[in-house]
Amino acid sequence: MSAPPPGPRRPRVGIARQLPEPARFWIAHASRHWGAAAAPWTDLAGARLRDLEVGPAATLPDLDATGVDATGLDDLFYLPPVAPELAVDRDRWAARLIESGTPVLLQLAPGDEADVPGALIVHDLLRPLLAADVEPLARLAAGSTAVWPLIAGLTDSAELREAGCAALAAAGVACVQPLALELAPADRRRLAELTGGEAFDALFHGAAPSERELSCYAASRGLAAFVPRPLLGGTPRQQRNRRLAAGLALAGELWARLDRPVSVGQGLLLAARGAENTSRDLVALAREGNLGVLDWIDDKSLEIAWEIEASGSSATVEALLEEYLGSGA
Image 1: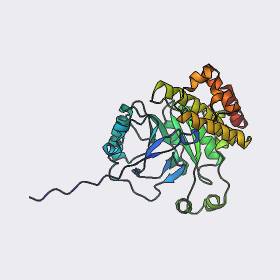
Image 2: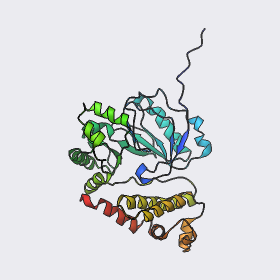
Image 3: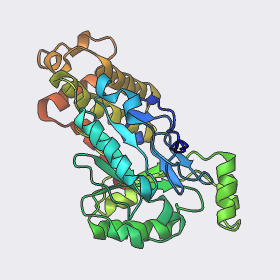
């Protein structure tokens, strides 16, 4: 009797690492070979458009080949959307990661479902926004989080912004974070073809969409602008340092978006990287008044770190966020 045909070959696996940033949803890890969606989706880690022409993968990468359980990754792992028939395998991936101590960001399209307690769920609004259909936005669960991919001429109009934010607010969505996509020329051509050429000029010659403009408008409707950094694994010292790093990173991001002096913003981001990677106990140093011994932390970063250590939040960061969102009231 002949042997059965071999099953589909699983994609190669590799884990990409990037610096957690508020503009990239705090993602730290992702599979290099995923590509399992059946329709276009937003790459949260790279701010790109994916799978305009590529069909869905037959299977997901082999989790056992990643060595996740052995390496004990303890920062946010990104799982992009999948075709419906792969949802069970995707959920198994996520559950295994969470069990091993790795926090997970799970990306869904409106209408998709997942059964993964403990995962950070981000709903990708790309498909309904491309269709100018806000009805799926109104069906999102109260308290949920969404990403609004911004594409010139397609998802950035005032009419769509107003209708979409109204639907999200009525549903009780907690946060909608805009993400201006970096489109390759081939992506622009395909998008222009999908619209019958109507968006060609905006796609190729229009101004870049404004994340701030959408965030301001959404904030005036009660929607948060940035996804909070999720709780992480690691030692208690690492968790404390990462809390400081998150505050410094958000401060640096807002500082840059407000066009404040570049040198100060660079100092904030440098301090965020230092806090992320140091083995020193920054909270203990702050309590002792010794944070200044670190050569990578400047006066503004010290101010923010002391505020976070003292009260759990930073008045400086809150003031920057209020200024950033103020023009949308």
